[in-house]
Amino acid sequence: MPDQSEQENVMHDIHDTGYKFLLSNKRTFMELITTFVSEEWVRDINEDDLLHINKSFISEQFARTEADIVYQMKRGGQDVIFYLLLELQSTVDFRMPIRLLGYMMAIWRDILENTPEKEIQRKDFRLPAIVPAVLYNGHDRWTVPMNFREVLAGYQDYGEHLLSFKYLLFDVNRYSDEELLSLANLMSSVFFLDKRMSSEQIIERTAKVIGVIAKASSEEFNGFASWHKNVIRNRLPEEQRGRLDRVFDEINPWEAEKMIYNLQLALDEMKEKAMKDGELKGELKGELKGKLQVARNMLLRNMSVDDVVEITGVERAKIEELKKQILQ
Image 1: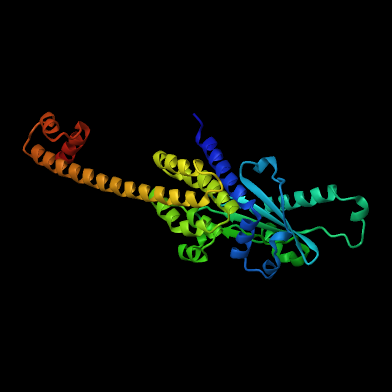
Image 2 (image 1 turned 90 degrees about the vertical axis):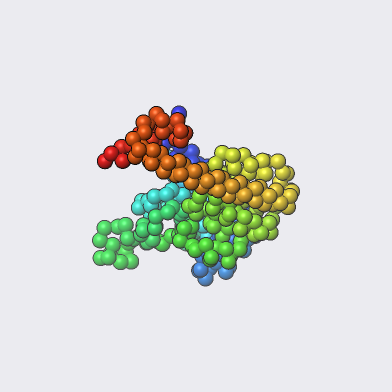
């Protein structure tokens, strides 16, 4: 049986794969940048100018920690590389600025190794700019320095002589529910669903964003379906996982409208069942409380534990514990 660390690694792999598949769609990546980044250069991004670089720059040391997504973009005749690092752990990693520097150096090294020496020697040769970013969905507040310079000893003394860059941060749990719902797009819906919550809340939240998901393109919807199946289903009880699996597996990719209908139907059924289960648990809890009160009265009258168990039907361990409390 796998130990806890192996199980956590599997969960990271599944989660990272879900996000990587989702954001490999150019339109979805564009939505992430244009929705959650308030920078002047964002206005110049054109989906047609984006090129997804399907190559990993992650070192073996961090191979099980994150999924990397790299996009190259033309802007004003210049190449700009967006390096998106998906940091999906529940704990804050203070090595992040150093790791980002390593990934940026790996990208530049790859470019230099694949560029003719004659071109590199030209006076106007420039390495492409890299805008690093972190997508974090942990519960604790992200307290890692945002500027690389701050991880250097005595950085206050040397100012502009030190290497410095500031990464973008997409902190899923810092966006309010109201903000995410008001944005009403695919990425805001994903962030809305990626917060920590109970299985009952997952059902309710998925139902709230169904209308937004229904408006997505077939390709975007397939990305969301894959993300939901890889990420969200693992937080649900086994029975509910199977119900959602059937919805996502039994419908062809081009039948998104039918899938939306079936998903809504499944969510309604699961929500109704969860309510009934909650009511049943409440009834059982109330029934047990009543029996324990009867058992207490019987014990106060010096009736034997065996008789109390036989009459009330309450398990012996609870009656013995109740007797101990009375005798204290």
